[in-house]
Image 1: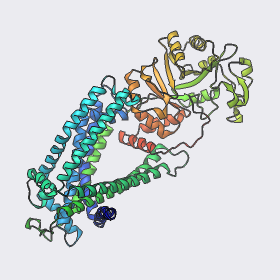
Image 2 (image 1 turned 90 degrees about the horizontal axis):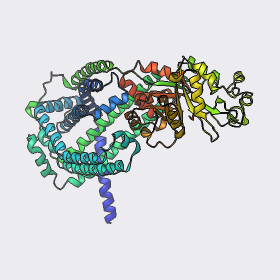
Image 3 (image 1 turned 30 degrees about the vertical axis):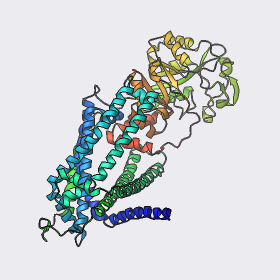
Image 4 (image 1 turned 180 degrees about the vertical axis):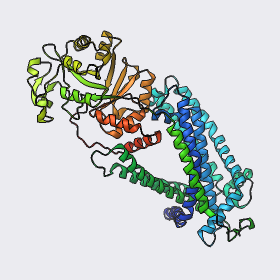
Length: 624
């Protein structure tokens, strides 16, 4: 019997919360108008502030232009943090004010919703001064409660995460980072529990200020006294309310993400088309989320109104609305729309004033391998035509000591011929057609010599030479250095390899020449390795990794990036080079990005994170 009673008790909580959501849904026109109007007014203040924030990010840096990621990370600086607090405070004020109007609409419900809206809005406006004091006291109390927890968390971070650059901890997650994360997590949980208990005690404070003329200062203690003995019931209801709100928001976000990921885009869709279509979906998502937020806030108002209790009070004289008065909520909303329009214009102007130039090298992977057969003179020529800054090739030694351009250890993939590079002479290798697999029109393509490729690219682009080691090389690095010097191209080449000892050997032979490490799987501490740059799989690139490599004075390249959205994302993150089979596409992405501001590029980043892929093309091999 006890179990059944307990189950019925729990179902009563669920039923009460669902009834609150139902009541809010029936009042959706009123609640949504209030919510959207106040959010628009908040945005009217926030939009210019964001523009100021981004301009400050540039002015306080030592650079004339920043990456999108640099701008985003400026929020963590002291000035950025303070501005972020201001933005959050504006949002909180809008939220509390919206809740106050909704609560007033439940207490002073009239014959029609627009009359209710005018009366409830007037009720809040009449007490705007005391409401402002209440909000300030609420913020102050929350900050005072949080301060010791934040201080302890800061001490933990200072004690465990300051021996090295923060990017090292964010990228490699050493034991000190894991310990700090665990301790800060426990501190955060403790803070959440303390805040929950205090907020439960203060649940009726706003009602006391609005409807019983309690002073803001004494309302918190009065609310705690009235809530004594009711904490558990309200706590359960709030958990159910929050869970319902979270599930509905997650469903809405999943729907929007699914629509973006499966947008029926035609082949060759441009970034601008994607941006416009995605903005439509995101706008619908924002509208849906606003409706959900308004209904959820209204449901919370209904829950707390029930706990506040009492009969509906008679309308005070100062809330009597003359019959001829028609400002109402629609006029209020109109003012909000005009203000937000002006503020967005100002914010956009501030954003456009920020220099957001992209500084990234386009590196053609094995030539333009998406358009011509890889590592052939045709692919290399196409890369030059498509405007690549660098042409990346692979080199190996033949049995007669010649340096040829070839990725694989044998010719099985390219020609179905079981001929090992290291065991064959140049004349034997050059009898094999390595182009027909791509298209019969390239049947004349043969394995090129490095010396030929050096002459082909000289003065037209730089050459990124990857040393391929399959255990049979004799003096690959030394012979390559000799060929580069013979071509007088020391300032137009760079070396890289998956084999770290190969990079070290190249640097020992020519310390002033550029050389870097390729990291295909295990990253390790890339920033601490010898070399001038590192190249990683695009999927492993992260803000922390990029920051740590840059902090060590090195560049970071990513491979193999063939989707325009992923290219845009990598550029926004601040990588220094895109290794791609599609250099012309990368050049087009740069052209389009030059027309976009930071916010628009961030939207493209978000779209990529949601899973949209604009390049359905299949590539035979995207390994380095």
